[in-house]
Length: 170
Image (cartoon, rainbow, N blue to C red; front, side):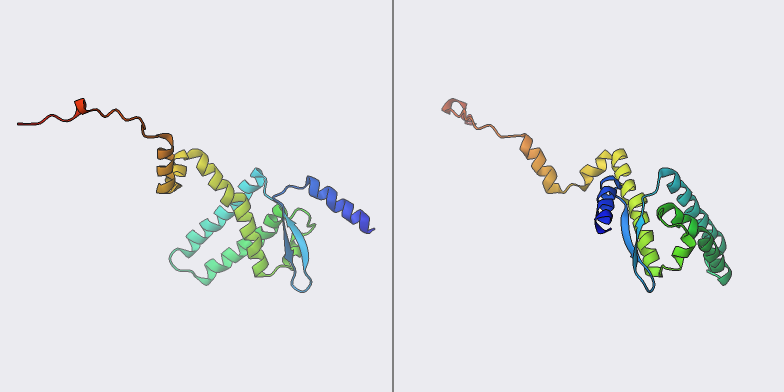
């Protein structure tokens, strides 16, 4: 039995997306879950949910956060969170049951992983594609100076002769 588990782990590690993250969750008993990167389609769905939440916040809260606006935001999170978990924790049969095993810290860890893997790093890469000049701006002055001086070498030949001396002005 033990060798079958090791073999299964070996096969899974060969074909698993390297961006799959493992996180320990649980209130009383700790277990591991796998957090998968979002497909582009799922990322659009998640972005729509986030946008909806921001719109509710802007509309309801305005400058004053009221108990009613907080209640609406909590209702939205309660409604959307199982659907969001379904997108990223594919091995879980019942995302609502998973919510009973998560504390706020673990939920924040999941949110951070999802953001970094699906929004943070990809956005940085996309921005660098469209702004090649940004890379040059991020280089230090010393790096730019060394690149400039590396391409030019001063002449070492000397052609000084007495005939070329400066003329005397009278």
